Image (cartoon, rainbow, N blue to C red):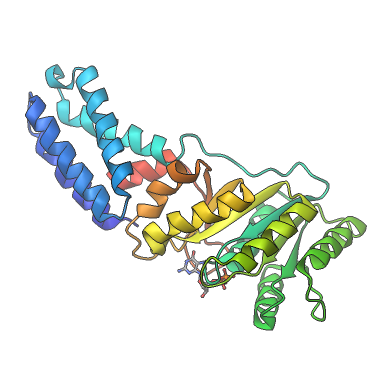
Length: 295
Ligand code: GDP
């Protein structure tokens, strides 16, 4: 995960590690390399620039120049800033409703259906909840089948209504079914398209308005870099979602989306997907991720 970024940051910061004392020029040069590493990882230019400016300010304010181990101190400053950028403290999901309704949003192929299953499985095993999955992709019968396959794999019931092409009605019926049958979490998997379009946005906005979920999650493929950030912005404008799910972090993603998305939409990354299997889900901890990136 983020191997290239880790390697480049390590190289940039390594230069300082050998020095007993450093100059302002050393700091500036190092931060230039840090910025380059972030840009290479597909972090937005403005974010990368702000990032290095903040680290520079802290470095000069914290007497890095006279510190006994300036290299280590710089690594710490970069790590702290990376943690801050990715979201500070980890945040859970709101499970306060009876039932708690969780609405999944995102583009087709982002990993919504897979993640819906993973989340149901996670809640069932870790939080001893009784989740119900609801299939609301009315355009692709294959998507409904896929959710049923996932449900069977993890032993979670799936509510669907194949003849019905109204996702608002299906969502409501799913919630009613949950209430009547003792489910305390409802996860609603919705239709996605290959790109943001008005019809999809209207549809998800209508579902959101009608069911008023406790938690609206935006699922995004981390491999899509800058596009991931733009898509997040479009969905957030319409849904004001509660959190982001970054999928496919097991691939050779450069890491730009993970680093940039929080600061663009100001919403936390709550979980990450790290594989196709149902247990490939992790709570996102910004500090652990920063630790991983900086080694
Ligand atoms: P949806 O269209 O948003 O519902 O996306 P799907 O859940 O169908 O996922 C699209 C593809 O991505 C499928 O082949 C999934 O197996 C795969 N996928 C989903 N999440 C992950 C992940 O975290 N890692 C990997 N490697 N593949 C994933």
